[in-house]
Image (cartoon, rainbow, N blue to C red; front, top):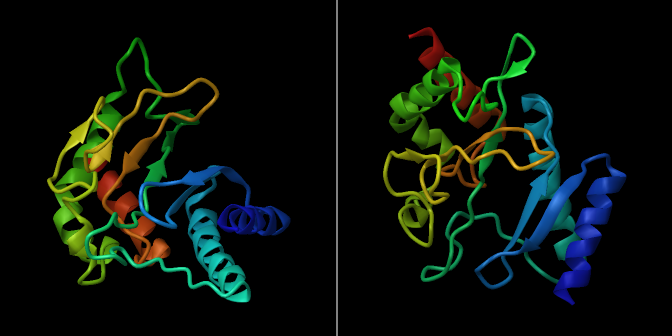
Length: 195
């Protein structure tokens, strides 16, 4: 049963020191979402590659094939890789709300990502089928951001109690090299802060 198999993925990851925060079935057939605990950028990229290896290995042991292709089924939902970022300046998360407003650094970081997203998209979405996913089934199709709408390219959700304030970049897909993706996203945001 798929649910039991998914539990074994999560248990294996926990044994390896990679802690899933939550996991659940998504919209597409056999499609699941897993959210990990926050980690420094390099660790997060390493955890993602380990996650893919674990899922593929356990699926193969049970006679299944796990696909991380951005659009494995032509008329179905695509697979995304939402990247949540919390950035600290002088030991303060720049996305923390201060009287319901973010600090100017947060807006500059967001502006930097939006300004450079076209150049880095080739690395965040490296396959031909990456572009079949964008603009369909809630995947972003325009360069946009929002505080309220979670279907935008960049979403700035209101922090939930007990959770880190974040921004969520929703365009990358699982075919991306996570090390390159995070380096480019962080560089774009930092350029926004400098400029």
